Length: 290
Ligand code: AMP
Image (cartoon, helix red, strand yellow):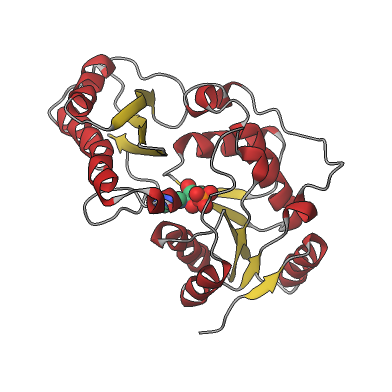
């Protein structure tokens, strides 16, 4: 078990990736904010499966947090993350400082367009601008062959696919399935905020998605009725504030329409002070990579 090489300087990171690629080795990039769990590690494993080398980035990106959000209290555990990355076979770890990524005079931000304005974007208006900007920086700092993202952040995958296509970024975007706890809760660094009682309430998100899935499996194709199946689950759950529960045409941010055969159902809710998101694909083969 060799620990990953730790790099904090963007120029050194870029040189490492360029050296590897010049030597004929392919590189997979896994952007994360750290506090790693098995969901993150599944991305590292996918990168190692597809590429010769895996680079994981650990950076809690201040520009994707809005005022009053959890930037300061977001969990950070560099030593623990290093150990987990060693077990997953990660080759290099990029952990820059905020000053290295966003010096005081940094001013350019990416305007991500319509896909970033609904759902998460409506609730967190500057979130995707911050995500797209940091991801574009990471693509430039670590010019890998492929980049790995989780289906867990569905809207983020839509925004990043747009970013790569719209700006001709020479990287292949791979989206990996959601990794869940045994009881169905989607793994998230933010689950650490939940008290045992909140943790129990949080299961309603997955229950609602499954209710929708059951209705879909029985042939229901009306998004409104599918949505009602979800809302019924939330109606009986105290201590959970639903932000949204929507059916989208699979692969993008357009609302699903009656009869669509492949949809993604997305949900976001607050459990106490913790905001959780989850989603499920209905009627589509699960995408390991595309
Ligand atoms: P984060 O550290 O939360 O920014 O997440 C880094 C990457 O890991 C993103 O591409 C997420 O979508 C992905 N990810 C987070 N949780 C999971 C999960 N439970 N299963 C699969 N991927 C995940």
